[in-house]
Image 1: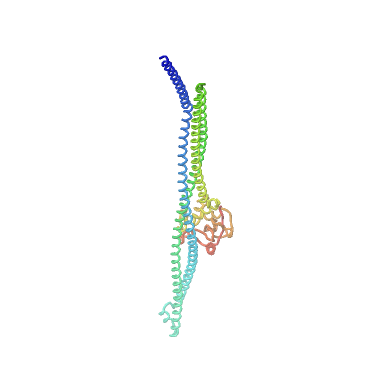
Image 2: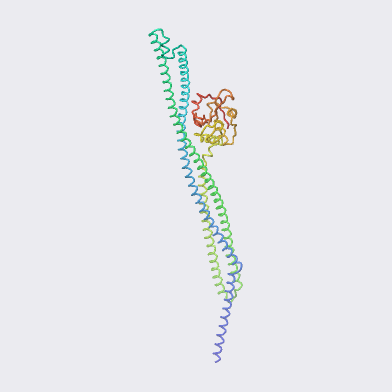
Length: 474
C-alpha cells in the first residue's frame, strides 16, 4: 500500500515537470510569435506592399508610354510616306510646267511676230488705198474718170482705145494689188486667231497647273506641320519614359533597403527572445528551437530578398524595355523629321523668299491685264511685280517709273530669278513696262490687254521692246 502511494506520488511529480516544460515551451513559442508580429516588422511589410503598388503603377505608365510612342511613330511613318508621295507629284508638275512654259513662250513669240506683221501689212494696205484714191482723183480731174468722158474727150478712135486700155490697166493693177493685200491680211488674221487659240489653251493649262501646285504646296505644308507635331510628342514621351525610369530606379533602391531592414529586424528580435528564455534545464531544447527559428528566419529573409530581387529585376527589365522602345521611336521620329525638313534646311532664307516671289508671279499666268489693277490674276505690269514682292513683306510703288528706281542695278548676264526688268528708253522717265525674270532667259509679265499675263522669252521680247534697266531687290 505504501509502495503503491509512493509510485503515485512519483508519477505526479513527473506530470508536474512535464506541465512545467510545456509552460516554458508555450512561453517561448509565444515570444517567437510576438517577435514575428512586432509593430516594426508590420510597418516594413506595409511599406513593401506600398512600394509594390507604386512599381505596378509605374509599369502601367511605362507600358502606356511605349504604346503611345508606337502609335505616334506609326502616324509619323504615314505622314513621311505621304510627304514623299507629294514631293514626287510636285516634281512631276514642275516638269510638266517647264514644258508648258516653253510652249507658251513659243506661242507668245509667234503671236507677237504675227501681230507686228499684221500692223505692217495694215500700214501697207492703207498706203496702197491712199495711192489708189489719188490716181482715181487724178483721172477724174483729167477727165478720164469714166468711159463716157474718155469717148467725149478723145480726138479719134485710136485715142479712145489707148485711153480705155490705160484706165483698164490702172484699175486692174490697183485691183490686183488691193486683193493681194487683203488676202494676205486675211491669212495673217487667221494665223493670229490660231495662235491666240493655242495661247489661250496653254494659259488655261498653266492656270490649272498653278492651282494644282498651290494645293500641293498647301498639302506639303500640312504634312510638315504634322511631322513637327508628332516629333514633339515623341520627344515628350521620351522625357516621360526617362522620368518614369528614374522613379522606378528609386523605388528599387528603397525596396531593397526596406527588405534588408525587415529581415534584420526579424532576425534580431528572434535571437534576443530566444536568448532571454534560455535555461540550464532546457538548454538542448532551446538550442534546437533557436536553430530552427534562425533557419526559419533565414529562409524567410532569403525568400523576402529573393522575391524583392526578382521583382526589382522584373521592374528593371520592364523599364529598360519601355525606355528602349521610346528611345527607338524618338530616334525614328528625329530621322523622319530631319528627312522631311532637309530641303528647307538646305535652302537659304533668300532663296526661299525668291521662290515665294516667283511662284506667286507664275500663279497669275493666264490672268487678265487690267490697267491700274493690283488684284490676283487681274493686274497690270507694275501691279504684278508689286503684288509678288508684297508676299515677302517688300513694298514697292505701283508706278513703273518709280519701281525702276528701286534696288540696285544688275547686268543682263547677272540676271537671277526674281530680278525686275524694265523696258523703255535710256532714262527712268521713259520706262513703260515691267517684268520679272524667272530664269532660263524667260520673264513673266502682264503684257497687254490682248495677251494678258504671260511668260515670254526675254531676248525675243526685247527686240520689239528695248531694255531700259534691270534691278535686284533682295
